[in-house]
Image (tube, rainbow, N blue to C red; front, side):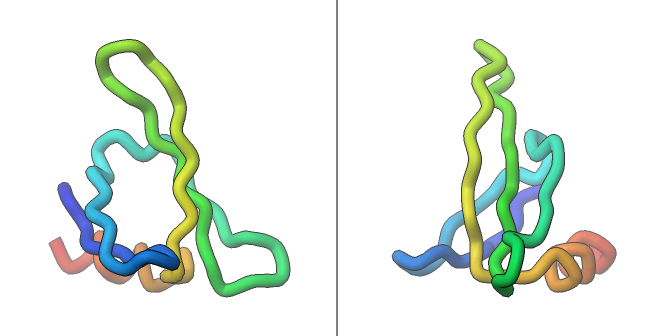
Length: 62
C-alpha cells in the first residue's frame, strides 16, 4: 500500500509494505519510518511531517 506523506521538500510516496517500523521523533511532530529494500535488504530511514497517529489513520482507511 502506497501512502502520500510529506517531508521538508514536499510530497513523498512511501510503500508501506516495505516499512518495518515507524516512530515519533522525540520532541517533534515528525515521524521516522524505516524501510527495507526487497532486493538487498538495505534499510533506509525517512523522516516525514505526519505524526504516527495520522499515518495509522491513513492505513486504517484502506
